[in-house]
Every structure is written in C-alpha cells, then in structure tokens.
Amino acid sequence: MEEIERRSGKIITPPWAHLRLPPFSRVALRVLQLANDENVQLHQLSELISSDPAFASEVLTIANSLLYAPRFPASSILQAIAVLGANNLQGLCITVGTRAYLGKTMNLPAMKAIWRHNLACALIAEQLASAGFMDKDIAYTSGVLHDIGRLALAVLQPKEYAQLLSSFVGSPFAILEEEQKLFGWNHSEAGRNLITDWKLPPEFEPIVAEHHLAWVKDSSWDMKELIHVSCRMADTTGFAAFPGCETTPYAELLDELPARERRIFHTTAESLSAEISMKIEAVETT
Image (cartoon, rainbow, N blue to C red; front, side, top):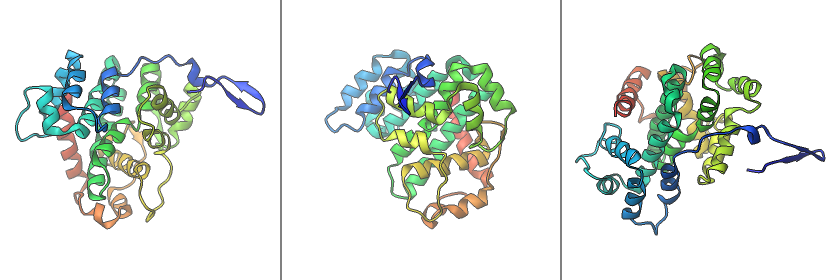
C-alpha cells in the first residue's frame, strides 16, 4: 500500500494510513500463499499449521465437520490435508482465520451476521464454480474473503459499525456511502488494501474491490461476477450482512444464471437456506 497518493499535484494522506488494524492470522495467510505452490510438500503445510496449536485444533475440528463431510475422520493435520487436498486447505484456513479475526466482536449480532454472510457466499460460490468449470476452491476462498474489508471496519469500530448495519435499510451497494461517511473509507476499498497489506495472492484484489459492480446477464463469467451473484443469493436466502438489506427474489436470481449453473440449485430459497444453515452451524459449534 502506498503511504500517500498524489492528486492534482497535492500530496494527500489516504484514510487507510490512519487505520490501525490487528494482523490477520499469520498461519492462515501463509497457507493461502503456499497452497497452490507445486513445490510445497504436505508435511510442510502440516508443520506450518501445527506451529499454532489453537489454530491447528480448530482446523482439524472443522475439517471433520459437516462443512467438509470427510468419508473418514482425520486424526492429524497431515491426514486432514491428505484427505481434503491443499486447495481445500486454503479455504479451511481462511475460514478459521476470519472467524478468529472477528474475535470478541462475534458477540455482537451484527458482526455474526457478517460472518454468516461471508460463509454462505463461499458455499454458494463453490457450487456455482463447480457447475461452471471454474476453480471451486478459489471460489470458496473468494467468498470468505470478499467482505474482509467489512470485517476490518467491524474490528476497528465494532459498536459504531454494528449500529450502522442494524439501522440501515436499503441496497447493499448504498451502504458503501454510509461506510464512507463513518470511516472515510468503504469496505470494498478497505478490503482491497488489506489484500495488499497482508500480501495475499493478488488475484483476490479485484474480487474484493469490485464484487459490488453490476453483472451483465449473458456476459462471460469471471470470479468477480461469480462472487457478485453468490453474494446476492446469500442475501436472498436469509444470510444478508445486515437486517434491512434489500434482496432480489430467488427465482429472479436463478433466471440470471446460465442454464448449466441454474440446474444445480434448489427450486426454493428455503431448501438452499436449510442446506447452508446446517453447514454454517457445523462450523459455529466447533
């Protein structure tokens, strides 16, 4: 991140320079950086995760939960990696790291809603990617990360941000303006800078920064557009990030999907919501 930017010959200190955020999990970020490296061995990833016992314990518990539903329970991190694969591991570690990042703010209903929204988006994105022959593991991780900037704002001023989310009624896009008023920075901008600051893989930056851009029906998909639709589907199936969020009817969203992707989804929002709820509850009870 640049400390300053130049506009019309003037040096302006960006709002991000004044924000003091706690670091994200070192282990989670390192796993994300290494998971797709062909030269990294499974035992190296296992040793990295095991270097943080608390983190490792939660990774193993969630790896054995309904979220991943392994055929055989893993008794060690190495076994979990071998069963899930390195790519699934990155989504798993980011899930654990994201929840840990929220910390005590998870006690606030508004913050818990953000967490559930991210995880629902990740689960929907994974399904969409599988149908569209895109990388489902990248899609899942992108879903968990897409609102990481919102989590950062929540950690910075949890009570104020919770109040904003609890009282706001309107479009998920319009709330960007309210965040700008409160912080001088909206969550998409905050997320983009976090991707840079934390040295996450750069392909996540446009996904985090641009997932609120409108998707044009019948255009070719990329990961930004997939997350955009997944986010809206999470909203309409009961996993909106704030209670007053305007939503698009589920049937209308299905009509926007290409036929191949449309076929994999349930006929009702309620049935998809129930499936997602079971998986989220499996994570929350670990």
